[in-house]
Amino acid sequence: MLRTIVKRKTKNFKRKSVTNRTNSFIVGQSNTFEQYDSIPESEITETPNVIELSEKEAERDEFFNTLMNALDPKEKTVFELMQSKYEQDEKTTQEKMATTLGVRSRTIRNRMQSIREKALKIKSLSEA
Image (cartoon, rainbow, N blue to C red):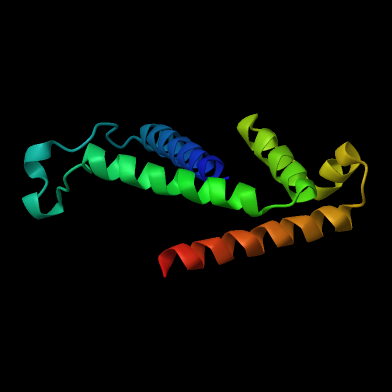
């Protein structure tokens, strides 16, 4: 789930970046990036260490596995359906998910709420 959120945010950022570049080109502004020499050294940040990234990835995977173990079979079904739709870049509604699973949309909403609550509970326990 977290992976899909990060993917969406990255895609939105890239989409906005391209839009801004094309808009500035249309307006007549320069479409080039600043030279690194003109950026003060205090604003330049180092890239994260590979070890730090792998640790964060391991934490995320552990959280995901813990969440999947905490969900009951019906919640897992809803979660997996949501995940598959996001991976396919399809926007879906609770009504569409309900018709796919053969339940009411209110049931989907309740299961999604339960998934959120369990995720927040696991997150708060892991931070403590």
